[in-house]
Amino acid sequence: MIRMLLATAAIALLPGLAAAQTATCSHRGALDDAYCDENRDLVADAPTDPARLRNPSTLVFAYTPVEDPALYASQFRPLLEYLTQCTGKRVVYFQVTSNAAQVEAMRSGRLHIAGFSTGPTAFAVNLAGAVPFAIKGNEQAFESYRVVVITRANSDIRTLADLRGRRVAHTSATSNSGNLAPRALFPAAGVTPDTDYRVLFSGGHDRSVMGVNAGDFDAAPVASDVYNRMIGRGQVQAANLRTIWESDPFPTSSFALAHDLQPELAARIRQCFYDYRFPPAMMRDLGGNDRFWPATYQAQWAPVRAVADAVNAPYTRAAFDQESRRELEAEARRRAAQQQAAPPAATPAPAARPQ
Image (cartoon, rainbow, N blue to C red; front, side, top):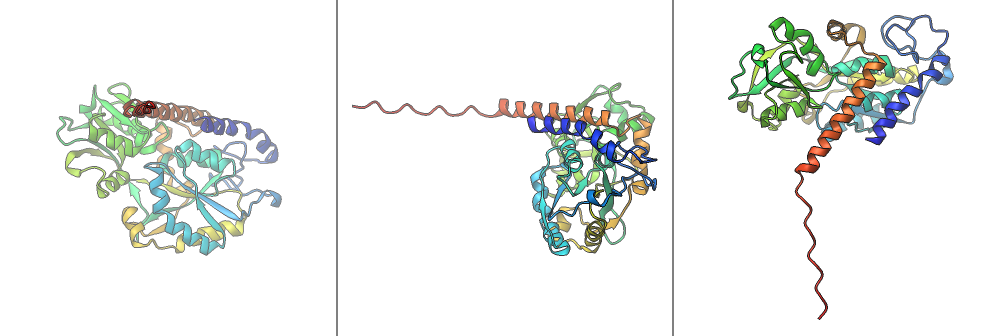
């Protein structure tokens, strides 16, 4: 927890120096002062000063913590081994426990390649200089997901209107599918989060699903791809749960590069991703996807930005700092609950008295 607090504080200290380095920038748009967007494609330009371009000997990759972070370290191992061969550089996995930690890691220069979940992609773009370039998919198209609202199969909840007065799990404040999209879309169906039902932040899609399954929550909006993977892995039984609503599709997690990698290295990494085909085990674990499709933040993330605009939830530093605090508080509550639920340590038997 202390490390996370220091990481968030570190973000607040960096803009002054970065702003001085980009003082000649004529357009930033929604980007932090550390970055410039002269070509107006909504993402950070590469530094114009060659001395600020990076060519690290080891590339660090992290994937969004929408589920158990340790799970993805194993699932993405074949990709990292391929990238090591393809780029000629060692590529290692960096396990993150929160969206805020992942964004901070890229901003601070400790993360070079990352898979960000749908909503936090915008924070990564605006505050960390992330440049999305790919989405996983199959031969026909890139992957998308829907927001689905789930409840227990034996629940009397049948429609969104039935959520009134219930305990509904949202994942985190910055999550598109787990919070922002429901706030933007539910009122049209006659129910408003925080007004008609109590919002309880679970801290993740998998935690929302498991919480509904256990009866801790009455219902939850979650990303359909995460929900389907959990059923496929047997973490929950489809027969125990029921979907009562689903949205139009959104793009799934983005794969992004740090904006200040040397252009030749960035181009090489992109091509390595586009040429890669998932092995069978990785296809199974990642919902049948077998490749990466080219994508841009400007085009594919337009519906996500529209949702944020609809609920007045800009991807700004103030919003990020607020979400960081929420994630820390949620993690503290989870740890406290785990400690309370843990059985007391056994008292060691007294040593035998010498005869």
